[in-house]
Amino acid sequence: MKIGLLIYGSLQTISGGNIYDKYLVDYLESKGDQVEIVSLPWRNYPAHLANNLSSKLTTRLTNLEVDLLIEDELCHPSLFLINRWIKSKVSYPIISLVHHLRSSENHPAWLLWFYKLVEKRYLNSIDGFIFNSTTTQNSVQTIVPKIPPKVIAYPGGNRLEKSINEEQIRQRALRNRPLQVVFLGSITSRKQPHLLVEACSLLPPGAIEVTLIGSQIIEARYARNVRKMTAGLPVKMLETLNADELSTLLANQDILVVPSTYEGFGIVYLEGMGFGLPAIATTNGAAHETICHDKNGFLIQPGDAEALANHLHELANDRQKLLKMSLVALQTHQQGPTWDEMGQKVYEFLHNVM
Image 1 (cartoon, rainbow, N blue to C red):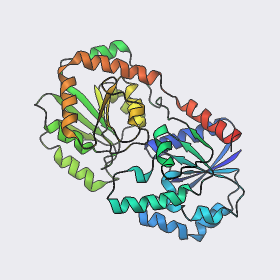
Image 2 (cartoon, rainbow, N blue to C red):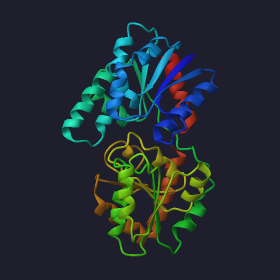
Image 3 (cartoon, one colour):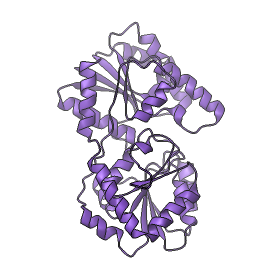
Image 4 (cartoon, rainbow, N blue to C red):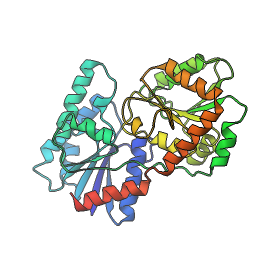
């Protein structure tokens, strides 16, 4: 089968969505499918909306020689009109790969209304869906109650090489040192790393040490403000690391904190659990599909720095509880999905359903 995949930018960009897309492409090609990447440039939202007026893009999609086209739903601003225009001109079905909806994020009410309007028009142009979680499927169903053929294919947590065992986790948890806390994700307002810095400022000296890892260029002003907040605190900021560097660093941490305002799945939580790291996330989005509160991590209300500080303080003072939660986190990872399982589910859906 010849398959098109429409994305913004490159598959080499490090983000949860791009990681998913890349593993999907690799799996489909390993099964003999041909995948043609249709890449649109990353720009701002208004510029993406303007893509709908591009005769060049319309012609390209109309002349695309594929059996089906998968569109990363992130690209919906560029396609919400074009999809409808090309429907009568192409023979291939259009499948949307949904990581999470923009209209599920935290935005001002008027802007959220507009985002939902655009997103609804896009979602109603789709012939089939690939969802990364039950939560994502449910969020789409609030906009499009009658969903066409679909599959839920959870992301894998086995991207990083791991060489940690239960005994190493035991030794790490019981060390006499500040609690090692890591944030992993782009330094953006949706990911909320500032909340972790704020929680750190509420704790007594020597309780925790924080490492923030992620791109600081996506929202450069926000990243600069986060850096200013770290002054005088035991917090360091690192740019994106390669897989080997990241694995080495995670193996020496105690807990992962990514208090996003919304996650469609949150691959990072499952990846961190591969190193025995309990995870702290928020109640918004799909984090609850991986994190069981007070078992392998904690779920807090979005923006609640005090609750975050309390959980960190508890684990810093109770290393036996930290150890217990770390071992449960490792078990969660071991029982979790793999990238091959994700690929197989999507492959079967594309070949047997669509």
